[in-house]
Image 1 (cartoon, one colour):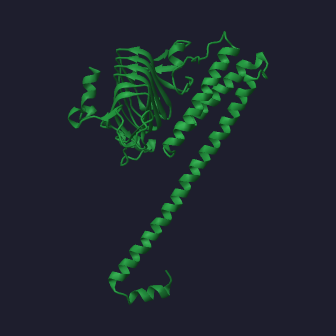
Image 2 (cartoon, rainbow, N blue to C red):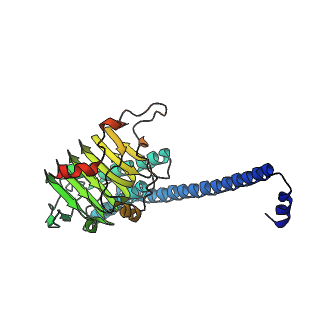
Image 3 (cartoon, rainbow, N blue to C red):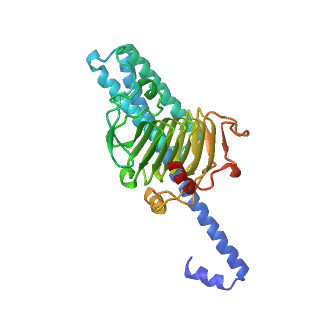
Amino acid sequence: MDECAEENLKHLPKSLIKRHVELQQQLDKQKEEKLELGSAQQQVNYFLDAFGKKACEINETIELLRNGLVIKENLPEYFDKLSKELQNLNRFLSTSTSYLRVYDIRKCKQTLEEMQICCQELEEKLLPKKKFGFKAKKYKVLNQNSVEKKCNDEVDGELMKNVWWKDKINLNNCGFYNRSGEFLKLNASDVDGKDVEISLLHDCTVVLFGTPSTLHVTNTDKCKIFSGPVSTSVFVENCNDCTLVFPCQQLRVHTTRNTKFYIHVTSRAIIEDSDQVQFAPFNWHYEGIKEHFKHAGLDTDRNNWNLVDDFNWLALDVPSPNWKIIDASERVQDWSLNLQDLKN
């Protein structure tokens, strides 16, 4: 506003000046919203373009294999490369769901599944002696006394082939594998910035203090799992009769039954091929958790614990029967008070 305009405003009634200011503020707000919308659309366009290009590259490799244009000696190398590319593309999709439309997510997921099925069928056909699956290298598992333990050289193929992101366990990960009836704990120094993997646990209580980068929970039953703020995503697969308590940026739940989630999530939770899953707000507190929220970059004032998208439920006007909110009277009011009882 120039000096002449300001001088003219001085001679107007206060009500008109107030209306003029409000109108200007509204125009500024609309301008900001247009800029934000344009930026969000650019982000979506970038993802779809990058995803499409990578999918085309993978399909070109699949066609080479299908048409017999790769010599037999090089087949293992090609299939290993395809496996890694599909893993990376799946991760790219998983970390982009917060700004993508449900339609885009479903379409991309369908594309991924079709390519994975093609790869599996081709490998079984061209390399029949090699079972399609992923071997897991030995990795470190820490108990509450930070004693290193080793897992088996090879994870059972029938279990691992169903892990939907099909990720390899590597030496940079930490977590717990193949345990039963134990109280397991990792401190912040163990998990900060790392990918934590919890798999094949039965009737265990797991406590993770600190800020993991990601948390993968697979093939567990009758377990209680507590985690400090996870800076990116939590992936839950094949869990039954469990209770999970954690804050995170994104949550993806797959083939899970009769499981309760006490969560703080800054995007929307996504479930698929799951039923009898229940949600309540995160309510576990420990010394230092506020600093861990800051370290993870999670907004403590933004919690979408009750916003859940069910990819198996297409009706817009009827709620999904596969999930529900835990009634306030049925919730554990404060897990902090129950943790000592769980340990005992």
